[in-house]
Image 1 (cartoon, rainbow, N blue to C red):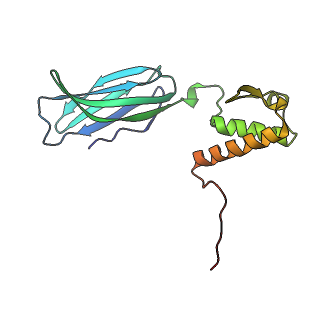
Image 2 (spheres, helix red, strand yellow):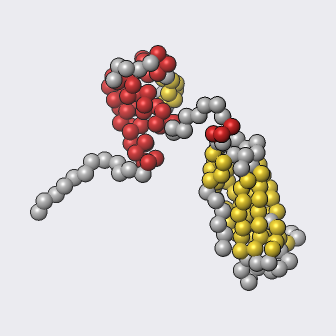
Image 3 (tube, one colour):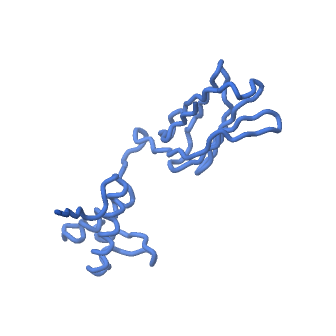
Length: 171
C-alpha cells in the first residue's frame, strides 16, 4: 500500500512508508524522486515488508512539486506511483505571513476600492490580467465589477462552495 502525503511544511521531514506486496522481487529497491522549485532524491530503507522514506525538506521553496516512486533493480525500473505534493511555507520561521490565496487577496482589494474605504496601498494595488499589469485605482467601475465577479467565482471554487444561483422549481 502506498500512502504519500499530499502536503508537507518546508523544513519538516517528509516521511512515509510503502508496503511491498508478494509480487515484488525481494532483490529490488525503491527510490523516490521529487521535482519542482527544488529537487530531492531518496532511497527507501527496507524493513520486512515495508520500505521507509524520510526526506529533509529544509531549503525547498514553497510550491507544487511532482514525485515519482520507483522500484529499481539494476537496469530495470518500474514506476509504482506518481503525483504532486504541496510544499507549504513554515509560518513559524516568518515574521509576517498572509495565507490568503492570490484570488482572495485580489478580491479583497477590489471590494475595498468598490466600498471606497481602501487604504492608500490598496488603491495602488496591481493585478495581473490578460492585458498585463493593471492598477485598481485606474480601472473603470464596469471593469472592476467584471473582475469582482471573476475573482468571486475563483474564491468560491477554492473553498469548495457551489458556483451560481440556486433555482427552485415547483411542480
